[in-house]
Image (cartoon, rainbow, N blue to C red; front, side):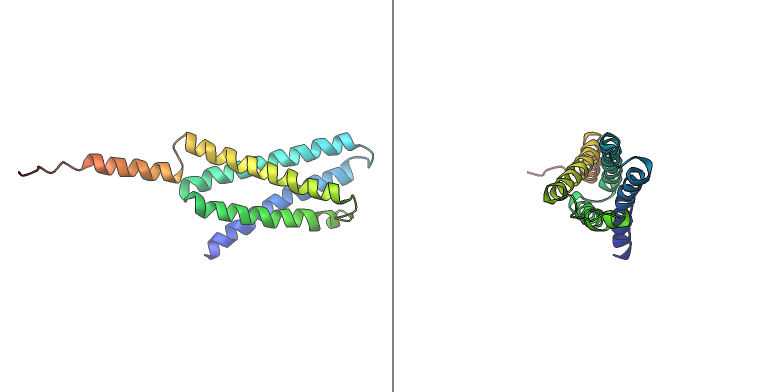
Length: 155
């Protein structure tokens, strides 16, 4: 159980670190008036987060049932989202609610969309290739049933 929470915490930490790096690049790398550059860095951040979660979903989907790893990924996303919304702005010297409610809730929806797309792509790739946990289990079952000789029936 301890290893499971360690993996969830590490994933949440990685997701938060990606956001923090993007915030620091925007803060120190560009002028405050350059919104186009900030938008490009933010888009890149969402792509990196989605790809990270796609890889995690692909790898964890091969090893464990979807219900088990799905809850772990959801917990990590929830923790990373809370850190991104409340701690991230404070670390770069901003108020989490300074830009208004619209921006605050837009961050939530964009983050959830990016993470959802990433998890979905990773898991669907594993399913399409037949490498997910369920497909492998069904494959082993079919091989086991095919390997047993049929019993003769007495009448």
